[in-house]
Image (cartoon, rainbow, N blue to C red; front, side):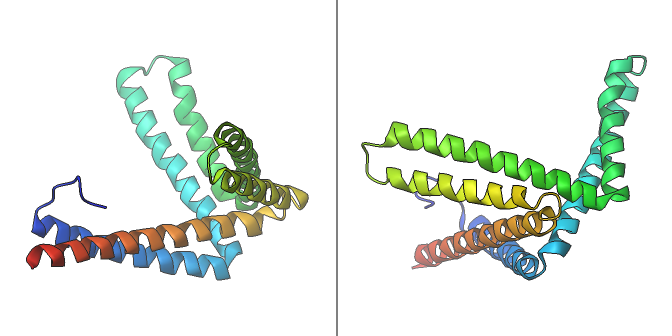
Length: 186
């Protein structure tokens, strides 16, 4: 895993510890979200709202310092501010919007996976891409069937599962780094 990378022992120790801690926190957050997807959906929309508001502040500052007289330059920070505020004022509408974006993403992902599978077809394992595409289609359809209400469940579940498996990956990476440190000590 780290064969081509050169790390000193101390950096690798810090990396492994910090990666395992971050991974465990993501695992816990993801597991909690799996059991409470509605709450996780609201957390996602709140997080996105804050991202838009911080983005609006940064963009507004830069626009003020560089293009303050340009009407079109103010469009992006004002739009970011409005979207961020709308996510806070109407969180359910924000969840519905994110659900629609998620369904659209899954359909595009399915199309891409089907296309790649057809290009890759003579090689072994091409069918896994077909399975991935079919799962993406099923998830998109599940979101769209009950939209906008179903978004409250699916957005949170999707985010929670993603966090959970990202946590698994980080813990595995940290354990691998820790094993490498132990091997170097021998």
